Image (cartoon, rainbow, N blue to C red; front, side):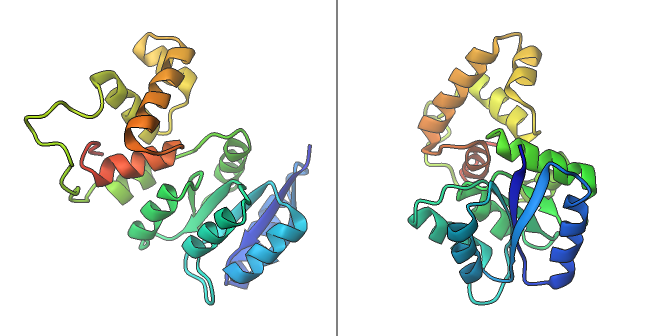
Length: 215
């Protein structure tokens, strides 16, 4: 199956570089390119891509507004954020909006392929080095529950969430914890319900913001 990809970035050199990399693999097809979010929304409706590689800082409509606009139109397409090392807050907001992960613009070919394949499977690939950089030095917001109240997440749920932040898959988490993959997925469902989210990156972003998870 050919994976259709839309590249959205206001820098031509970035778009062309990504396109050249993707064209080395016959499984991927760049069906369209956009330089801003307004073009991106129109092209998504026209080409129905399988994955969107989306820049954050663009004229007319940036990446976060683009994600919001796509959701408003019911266009639920996996998004991988294209980022630099100075966009921490925007990256966190992008994950909270449901992005499937993030890629540095100088990321190697194999990592680009891995991220796209994970997104197609409905998984999230959170690179440990970027996750640590984005979340590690943040001062978390005061959590809603007090120190004397019952923790929102159980010890096992925290272990699962920490593993997610490392980019581990359900099967790997189950192996590490000595539990079945099904039990891991049950724990994930409980985490999502407690945090009011519906994806792994959202869970990590919200947990860090609320001071529940420290990376």
